[in-house]
Image (tube, rainbow, N blue to C red):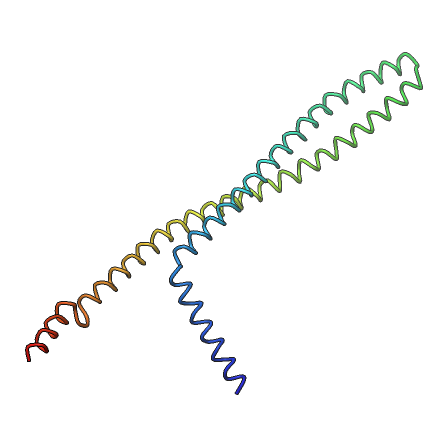
Length: 174
């Protein structure tokens, strides 16, 4: 018996939730669209941040690419001047710069892949939000039409106030 009552309560709760969702469907749609807009803005900010980071890394790569040949020229000059201690430290510096260059290039490659992926996601989300906004406009129009239809049915169907007044007059007169 308890299970039956529990099932009845769950059914009543589900029907009440459905009625509530139906009553406030337009407001719920608008809120979900606002939430999607906020998520899209956050994704755009993340995309902008990644692009800035990629540009910074690219500038660092350009700087390293300019420094390495200069350091190589200095190393050759030190080698020609027979300054072995300077040659050794310069060679180590060139190797360190080349390692840093390789790491930064890997970072730029990863950032480029992430940026492409995020751009695609932002474009997809933007199209989806536009579709949702258009759907919300259609839903508002349908909801308004349903409300007008209900009012029209109330006036046309059942007894109108004028008919009720006529019946009351007829009852009083008889």
